[in-house]
Amino acid sequence: MALRTPNDDDDGTSHPSPDFRAAVRRARVEEAERADVVSDLRGAELARLELLLDALEPVLAQLPADVDLFDVGLTHGLRPRLFIDMIAFVDMGHDKRHYRFVQDTRHGRIILATSEGVDATVEAIMDYMARRLVDREKALASAAMPVRSNEGPMPHNEGISPQMDVTPPLPAEPSGPPPRQRRPRRRLLSWLVGVVIDYLGLIALCVIVWFVIRAIGQHWQDWMPPPR
Image 1 (cartoon, one colour):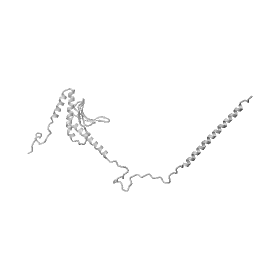
Image 2: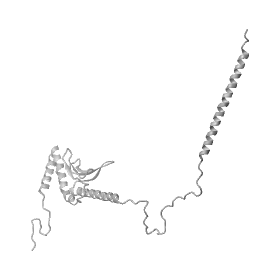
Image 3: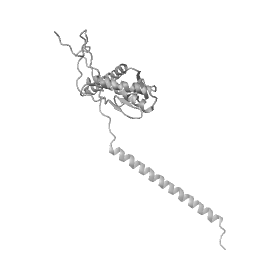
């Protein structure tokens, strides 16, 4: 005969034990909704976020031990928030009843999910965590892929014949003797020719100037009157 526990019903099914802390938080939320006081409303926000945090505990317990993507924590400020990681958090809407799951992106803040129930919000958070884990695995896999060097031989695939050369051909070397370089003797000869041409031009310029000065002197003597 099987033993019955206090948590078993008549049909033999077991149910989780009641949570007194969750009952106290629900009572605080109901009391704050009846009273129109700002501090009571803030306390109601904290109580709702604490209920959500309690519902997330089984999910957080299933995360891998080596994953440090998520840092779940509740902040007590003017507007309480339940942070999932550095860029995503949950807060309460303007009516203080709906959970808002928000993410900060490079294009601004977006709302991932909005729900009044705790279970629906937990489902949205689980989907977000799963996507982050998949993105992390893809990033680790791409970083661990070895880089194949172009110098090594390329493995033969099924669609490539072993006799086929898949490497690009090297450029053909130019045939014939290399072009003859200019000899230093030719360079010296061209320099001497240039120096001679420069000196001849300078001598011709001096001769022309001398003839011009002589012609001017003769005209000056003809123009001057003879002495008395």
